[in-house]
Image 1 (cartoon, rainbow, N blue to C red):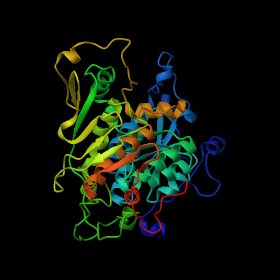
Image 2 (image 1 turned 180 degrees about the vertical axis):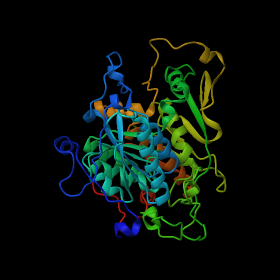
Image 3 (image 1 turned 60 degrees about the horizontal axis):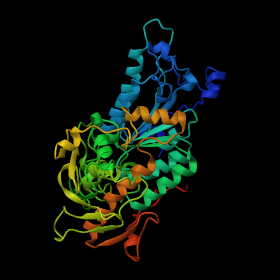
Length: 460
């Protein structure tokens, strides 16, 4: 489709190397995407964890990580707002298939940068470009990293495209729509040596509650772990929404992407700049439901507590009642059973007691478990006070971030396995290293989904 038919602003790709050598393109009078030094903005750049004791110095323009954003709904507006106040990065582009959301995000970025440049500083606000097609943004060699917050059915395709384009990635959870996608994105990130942070902030934020819970559990304070309960909502169903008049300025075909073609409905892509989380999460074409939504957070904590970041369960059991939307469970090789259902958050039980943790609470039973401080010889897990900063630090160091691609892929696979138990009502054996169901050819056809023509998974 022609760009002017889609109200698509012209792209202005310009590498930082060429920016340093010349101030404008020879053809076209477009302004260069300026990398503004921190001293012009009146602030010092954030120091990396490795340089915490060093004297802070303004970041040189070429030392800044340059960012593009795909999908400008609620989550990515939050991410954009955070990064617009970070002098260690520079936002260069925003992308959305909805004109209103795209233009709103663009205005947010331009206004924020304009406000932060002092009067009389002799500089102008940096250029921020809008895109409908994210491939055009990925083609720019002056963008280092991409923040993805699109519906779940787009994640794996966009992660692979980013890796193939040499970009580092921050991708919202749940990381994938299918088990096959989970294995594929691990392979892709590793092959291209990319830094991917999964947007599962419970490992870094919320006052350290989740890290503390996992440290006590892995230090043996509740004894041998026996079981866990994860209290999150239910699975997804096939979409049964009707048809509404199309939202003006929305490229609906591109929003659907790999999902089947269907009529527009505002529950899937809300009109305008919405202030709620859309219910596409309830439908299998786009998501594994609220089970994969919050389950990506809370089953991740169970995986962390069990030291299973590079593995997973070996068996999944459906509920006894086929109409029940809770009580499916997974079983690990050490015998630990994890049930979907129970109090909100994660509750982990051992031979000497238990620990329950959610964003607003951390408690043990008996209470004396948490009252006794950890010792130096106990397990101490990695700390990072800021999920975004951890990602940026790791882009510089090339180390794995705290929610590396395998962390996100393994945790969401637990949720996918539970969904298979609900959808098919069958007990299944799982090999977490082979990424296959054991002795069940039919079940292995459930590892992936069909995609619409033209939206297949890209080749690595």
